[in-house]
Length: 363
Image (cartoon, rainbow, N blue to C red):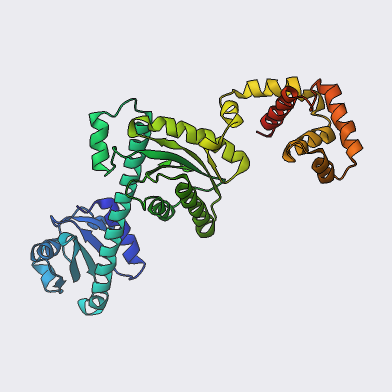
């Protein structure tokens, strides 16, 4: 069925090519869009004949006297999926407008086809987004969820790994970019990809090996950067069956938080201390920072020294070299840290406290 909104778009597009009166008529012979507003909603007998005979109809000046609601010109049936869905009419001297007619019909049919597939893509995008969010939140795989999975060709018997890809600082993406994204993430028959807002994609992949998932993700992030200039990060959960996919999704969220600090791709299974820090409330972390390295926060030199000590894996020699200071200066600074914080970098407990405080501070 040809809707008035689409018919009006067709009229606007065709008018860019030819400076003649254009009408679009439905299969009942009613004009649903026209460059002349007074003709909209009126009956066009010539268009109805074109619909019934499924071929173009040339209308001469003589024909205008016997056919209702017509003007001289040409009427062409519009085909979609081998069915007539309407008629496009061009008013004017048939000799002058006929050379443009077939091109305009083909352009109209292409426009309708593109619009149809765009609407199908948008519908599938919304349907998959709703389905994935309901699946993640479901406590059990219900009959309704199974039925929707079948409609979307999703196999719920397959174990999957949840991946969250987040785009950094982007404008709203176009339909074409989204299409390219989902085409890239759906090469495996068991992969399920869905949008989550305009900045995230949830990818539930049936790929079973970490290295394969990692390679696929790295290629995907490279694809985004080189083709669309999009910088992205990713958090990866662990593999679970359909009923426990929420656990994988929560792990992916936790890994994504770390990826936002480190960049690129982070797997939840690689996290250790970060597992604990991810569960702590921001106010707890702030209080912990105050209780530990709070006294040296104003002292950028001491704070940088502690940070570099951890970067250099507690090697005093490498830390001194990296900071371009004498080893004795480093000892002096660490002694100063101990005096102010009451934490000795030489003791395991105190060192761990300092490390976690620095980690929270970087967050």
